[in-house]
Image 1 (spheres, helix red, strand yellow):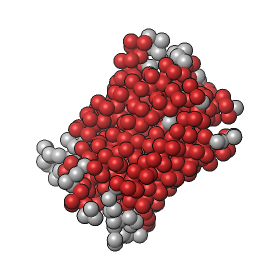
Image 2 (cartoon, one colour):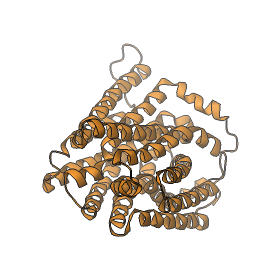
Image 3 (tube, one colour):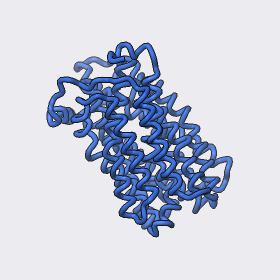
Image 4 (tube, helix red, strand yellow):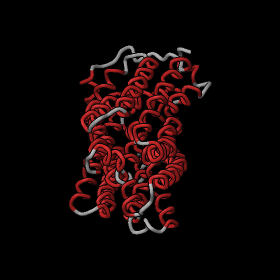
Length: 403
């Protein structure tokens, strides 16, 4: 099946990419549940171990857009298979890491390939279904992200509690290799773009202030989320006094709510991407503030984490579609720019959370996170007015549509 038009008759390519995306995103986020155990074994503090999140995220942010612009000319199947093979090797290296430096190098390798896979997988999904169903298509691929949150991170935490964090990375290495084989045998070949502009010319879309504003918004949203989420396992262990196994099951429930969030985000983003951003940013800010006060009350903790998990998964999908739509002339690069901005936010969030813990204590990270999300809400409103001013002639009161 060389023609993507034929692929529209079947959703199999999207399911395969979603399955691969599960492994790709689990590799990035599994460390969230393993930080306390890794920090003890590598003999560093939890905030220092949190810098591994920053390293991964900043690498993605730095190399994502130019590498995606360059790689978009190559055949998709080979790129996707190569990505999963590299993820397998890097996770095996992580499992064998003897010190913090080796672990940092092991985290650097997959960070280089993640934005290429994620951006081109999203673009392929949109090509299969058509741009009018972009939200639905990307939410289907994004199910791999949600599944990584539901199963990857919590199961990794449970495996680490039972057998050690190295076994968790070793298992992920085997899973990545299996997904590479699955893509090799069952994913149809899909040609890259034959006539592609230079990398610098493609990157010039950032001169558009609306596109730059949407990328900045993704940065702020993810910075807010990961200021607190990076240290959620530590909050549950140190302030909630839960053991590692219980933390794993709590994270499983947190991710389970992401199913609802992914569905809601995919539906609302096609109506108003900026409106959806505000709709999910407000409750997540409230939840991040509330988690510490209720951490020892299991019922209220379940409610707060349920709201947090739903909103967080929704914002993954909403942010991705929002930036892709703002850069509709080059959707793949738009996806990569979102990934870059989001990962810059993840890295900054991990750093901010670590500094807050060092200077004020673990109980204050939720307030810092909510403050950043509040800035994102303000920027969303500014972008809404800017778009309306750009699209609506002077004197026209009502203007339909918009992001």
